[in-house]
Every structure is written in C-alpha cells, then in structure tokens.
Image (cartoon, rainbow, N blue to C red):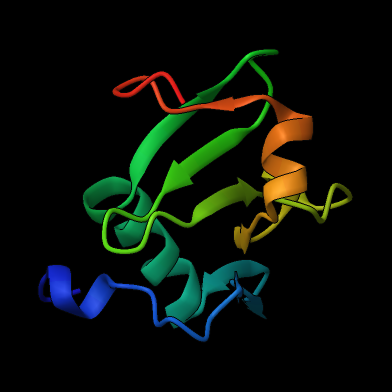
Length: 103
C-alpha cells in the first residue's frame, strides 16, 4: 500500500474479505488481505470491548465501527482476514468502547 489515502474505506463498503489461494501447498494472500492488514496497522483506530473479546476498530473519517475476524476456523490461524462494519446494535451487544472518548 502506497499511502493512507489508498487504505481508506469507501462509504459504500460494509465488508472487506480476504481470500487465500493455494500454490504448491502454500497459502497466498490476495490484495484484500494486504489491504486489511494496512487498514488495521496504519489507518483504523483500535477500540476495546468490555468483555475483552474480539478485535474492533473505528474509521477516523466517518466513525464507523469495524470488526476484524478470521471466520474460517477450519484453516490455520482462522483463515484469511475479514473486516465487517458493525451495526449500532452489534456495537452495543459487543460492548465496544472507544478508549479515547470512553464511548
């Protein structure tokens, strides 16, 4: 990823899913895997949950809350990453807390 502007999430996106391809017994990441990694490392702001479970992030440009997961549990490490926008109901259910503002 060249810069922060490339890593931003479009307003119409609600799900970014990485995929793995297999080549000679090795898993190869697709561009979405790399994009998700860049987003969580350099762009999105990490949040906490009251239960300490899950990986949650806030988009600083629009305030949307995202969950990072690896939902393919049958694969090593849970499989490729997935970023999913959470609804306000899910944010409340998970007890997501913005540590900077305590909201």
